[in-house]
Length: 466
Image (cartoon, rainbow, N blue to C red; front, side, top):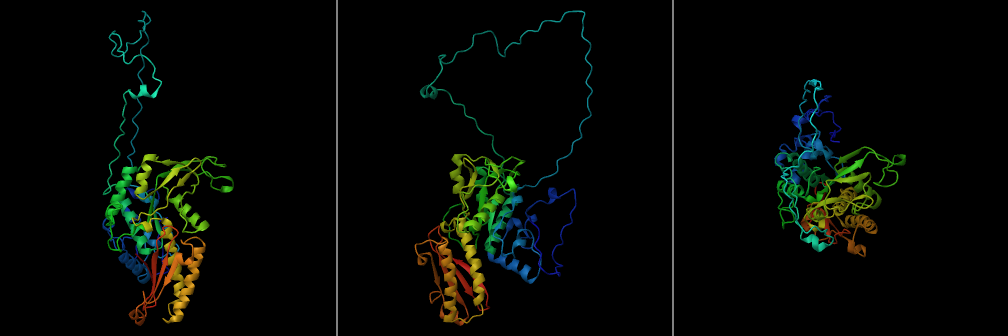
């Protein structure tokens, strides 16, 4: 749900009071828009959102931690460390208005037919003439023989049918809410660095719509066209915190024996009410289940979706490659079920393409900050460095043993660096201590460096180095 998160303070007099519930109307005809999903204090103008994650992080921390104000919409989840996935299914809707209720016209009494005239015989009914039948012999085409082989059929004329033009794409109007919420999810994910946003698209979106959506989102985030060479400022949008899935699912509310969900066409599927839903709920379930079963570093793909009976719209085989190249994770039909065939983020950088890599680094960040708190008040000496080496070596050895890191030996899978290469004499004099943790995720095989810093105020900071 999109309920607000309340801080444990009773002095919140500046926050907006909860809106009263009025039964019988939802006011969405006049107020539907991205403001329903965002904190208006952090995003005062959804159409022109800030592109700097650092600014958003500072503003959210200030309102929540210092001013003790409520955060709203997706920003209400900002203080929660446990959140790993976020989705806003309702963002795919467009504004609507109530249809006028038309009164039925009064019934018209049928006029009584006059009684038949029985004083004379009626004319006999004759067969109607065929259209354009002037009595001339029909035109003859061909030789009157039946074609039974491919060569004969090759000479026949081909009729081409053209589909009706699709509805107009209007990302400045009709789909503005969708783009504004998706941009906010990317911004909050990058600022928070704790979760991945699972994005979905309207049900009717085909290849042309998906291509236009990708272009429009990247323009709003200040990024070039998809896959274009770009090495801009690091504080611009990081699309590795977002993944998009399509198409929609036709699912059933029916449950199998003992209330367990059943697989499409599998045993125990007794039917039920059918409905079409965005795929984000099912996808989040697959990601969470895969993480609990095998770890966040295992790609949540090629897993059957439960209670799915069909896809809408159907994606033609010829369109899969183009959608895949756009970074869209497709759900595809298999002989016995339906499966997500990839688990990619929207990032253009190859090392951040896999969703499992981003989630592994999120896990590593959380654990590093948690375990690093034990050394906040320790002296910056050899004993501190040895203790940190032991702590993180045990952590990374465990990840290596579980298959999260690549390499034949632990030395090939990770490194811990905290010597003169990243700690100068000036840093030590100023009370700063840097720990660089270099990891090689199972895929891709490049090293990714993350840095843990203890500053002069005793605070821990975590960053990723490119």
